[in-house]
Image 1 (tube, rainbow, N blue to C red):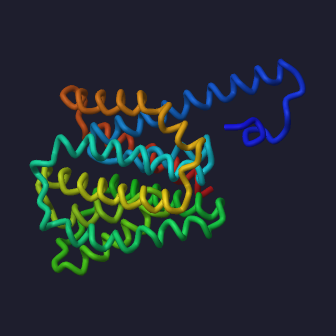
Image 2 (image 1 turned 135 degrees about the vertical axis):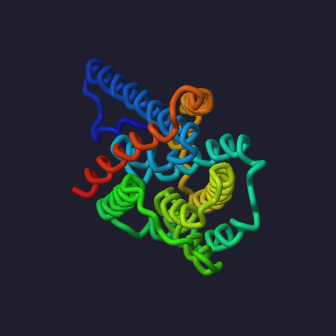
Length: 261
């Protein structure tokens, strides 16, 4: 990332240049830490890579840069976690979700290009806080019958995935209403998230959103992502996923409320 993009003026002496380099190095470390936490959360609890990353990265690199970066990260993490749960996948239960999302992802990406950044952050805050509140309250919704609900959830998930990399809330709520077994729940959701992420990636690529700086941040963040995934998958023996999930939800609620306010 250039100095102009970072601070807006040219450095006047070596001291200023040194300060700029330190600031950029610190930002790089913070980005890596966020990617680690996002990958760790998803690997341990089965959800959260995009929710956690999108709650923290916009404050570091701006939402317009965070969205394509998180799309890359989410695809990688979803693929890695699915490798653990693919045997529980039941395609017949998720294909309506996937089909509907294919049509709405491009609309979400188009929506992102047209919305003001402050409005985009506010909407993202509402999504994060709203989902966290729903999950923390443990609301029990009636079982949904008929494929129309699947198409509706898939369409909304694809729209949110294309615009904010957050397809999770409507899909998780739908899956909870269907009362799937835990392993089926994780296998089906990871499959949807992976396919949705791939469609989002294609959309961002066609829109020219993967700039050189985005690619550099992704490649430099790979070790953090890999370590986060390994730590999450190994620590579920000692850390109860449900306890960690509630902690993550409280943090999401606070960060979402901060974006709104």
